Length: 307
Image (tube, rainbow, N blue to C red; front, top):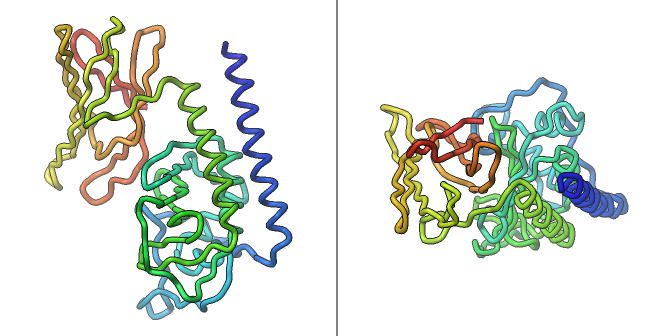
């Protein structure tokens, strides 16, 4: 079974790699030029997005002459840390461990294969946008984002559907290569779902509750998660409460420094059932760090194991 899963994953990665290579070859026919990388060492700041670049006087953001350009060219001028991030990926020395895909405004899943992450970055960098005559109408239901997470900084490639780049400042720039965005979304969506299935069973949220058979008796318990905000006086936590309407199960546990849950996957090992919780952690000032933990029901208590 493991050999079959490995083979299936190899095929999945090979398929998405082939799709991205096709896009890369198509891009060679365009006149786009990727932004040059700086030669400085990594200076990623602890923020949940790339830092805005400033002009020499330290005032407003550097002006960008309107026209057709690659996303890398635009983001290199707009975000101070972009070139360093780009250099780390292209050199292979600092490929971010996680790529988060948002589709229709919601988290679709994660990619952790570094080769796929690097190839997706290159493809997105070469997508052309037209910064002339920006649109202002937005439909958040069609929001798409490819977010590259180094665990200290997140740099997103945001779109309002595949037709427009959306940098959250009221302007939508026309995408000259919408088919590339569509291809990436379809390929990555398939890959993240296969990754979920290979590593367990994705547990969806239903009305604020997750159904999880924590004790393995065939009757799922109800898991609810509540964010407790302690401000800057003490670490905030995610409170986990497990209860059952059929059996006598009631347990509580806490994820310290947790702020929001991204996904929950159920699985089993030699110790019994557990869930893998992927969440955002941090403190009152910055809480965009991607983290994960295992949660088990042991001796009537929810035990949280940080990974």
